[in-house]
Figure 1 (cartoon, rainbow, N blue to C red):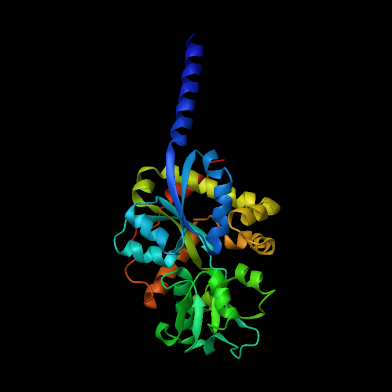
Figure 2 (figure 1 turned 135 degrees about the vertical axis):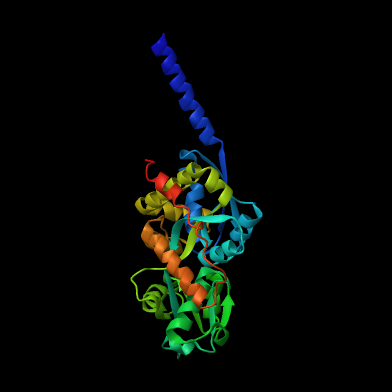
Length: 327
C-alpha cells in the first residue's frame, strides 16, 4: 500500500508539474520584417514552445523598435529579436529589462546598384543611405563603422529608414545612393536588380575593433520581473528557441512552405532565407557572446550613437545556463 500510495503521489506531482508548466503564459513580441519575420513564422507555426510547457501569445509589430516600447509598457513579456542598440538605450533610461540571449548576428552588406559610380564606403559622405530606421542596431552599427573607419559622421550622410522590401524598392528607384541590407535580402533581389557590394558589417566591425568577433543586431530581451522571479520559464523559452533553430536547419522544405504561407514570401525568397538559416539566426549566451555585446556598447557610446552606462545586471545568464540541462 505504501508503494502504491508513493507511486500515486509521484504521478500527481508529475501531473501538477505539467499543469503548472502549461499555465506559464508568455507574451512574445517581434518585428514582422527582416530576420525576425522568417524565424518568428516558424516559431509560431510549430509546437516548440508548447512542448516546453509555454503557453505563448504572439504579438506582431510593424516597427523595429516597437517591441522595446511594449516591454517598457509591460504589454509583452519577451522579445526574441529586440534591436540591441535600442535595448542598451532603453535599459540606460531605467526600464527594468534584461538580455537573456544573443540571437541575430549582423549579417548585413553595404550595397549600391551595379552601375553606380560609388566604389567604396569612403564615398558615402554626403550620400543618401537606406537602412533600418534610426535607433535600430543596423543604423547604429552602420554609423559606428562609417565614423570609425571612414571618418563619416552621422551628420555627413542622410539616413533613409525603412524595412527590407522598402529599402530594395528605394535602391531600384534610385531614391537612395546606397543601402545596408541583410545578406538574405541581397540574395533575394539580385535576380531583378544587379548590385555591387561595398563591404560587410562583419568585415568592417573587425577592422573597427581589431577583433574576430561578429557583432549582433538582435538579442533576446525580457522583462526583469519575469526573469528574476521565474528564470526557469525563460530557460524553457530558450530551449524552445533552440529547438526551432535545429528543426529549421533540418527541415528546409518545410520552412519554405511555412514562409510562403505565414509570411507571404515567394518561393525563391523563402529558399534564399532558408539557405542562410544558421547565419541569420542564433541562440547563444556564452561568455564570448556577452563580451561581444559589451564591446558593442563601448563602441556605440564612444561614437555617441548610444547614451548611458552599461548596467551590471543587464545580462541575465542564469536562464541560459538552466536551459542547457533541458533535453
